[in-house]
Image (cartoon, rainbow, N blue to C red; front, side, top):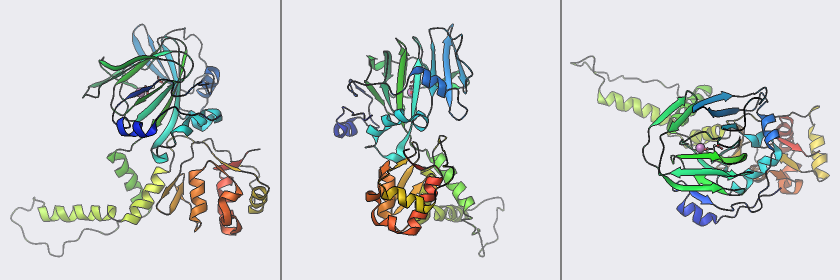
Length: 373
Ligand code: SIN
Ligand code: CO
């Protein structure tokens, strides 16, 4: 199913994206849930799926992590289950990410879905991410406060909350309403009726993550083996003092590694195309041969991209799940980046190059693309 968003993107980007929260009443007209509470609970019972349950019984917050065995004895009030990256595991739900593809793919993270019974919620908190919270079935009371410096505390070791805040948005969301919240704006939602909420999250890396990812790349690729040297070392009065000129040289050494655009680009492509959430990889058995792929494509079969797979382009290089797509066929590789359904026509001449077909076969045999059978 295709979901059409009732939103003026231009004015949204100018006035709200990363700036101000916005409640989009009727953002999806005639919204239909993509998943049932039972199916969501089923996902929360699976090993590969990340899920948690947040309860507030007798005023005491508690968090439990999935996979869950059962959901008995929970009662009818004050609990919520939240399932991460549902777009990876549940095909119809993945369609909800598509209307947001006019924002950049590399910033998109996942679709989290929560099910709450009346009173259920995770409490007042901040997120570091941009999020579009779509109201599915039921009604939920949502409040958003101003972005001001706020102390965070943990009423439970796995739950970060903020103190009560004054609301700048205070509304009852009904199915199809969408609440956009930029990073750092406190918010809280409490179900009035049994509710489903769909959170389309956009993630921005912090400098710490970038440094750590870059350091991993430097190590894995044996970069930066050059060593500090000081043939001009001079006698000094204070042997304990590291001189400013020495510090500058050390700093420069580290900066030189970062200052190589080709290295930076390659690293970032590999780094950012890795998914932070498990993929539902199913490798075809027996594997396809390049001849199979050529024949199937020639018969008009389309290739579908695995939901959640990150396929991104940096300059003239395309990256899939942490690896460069090594091919001179930039246009065909770009088609794989841009479209989640690809036909032979779209790949054009590349399909006549045996090397490209071998590459495509490897991608399909990895479970990254598949034929709809
Ligand atoms: C929820 O769906 O209950 C949590 C969404 C959020 O506040 O980020
Ligand atoms: Co939140």
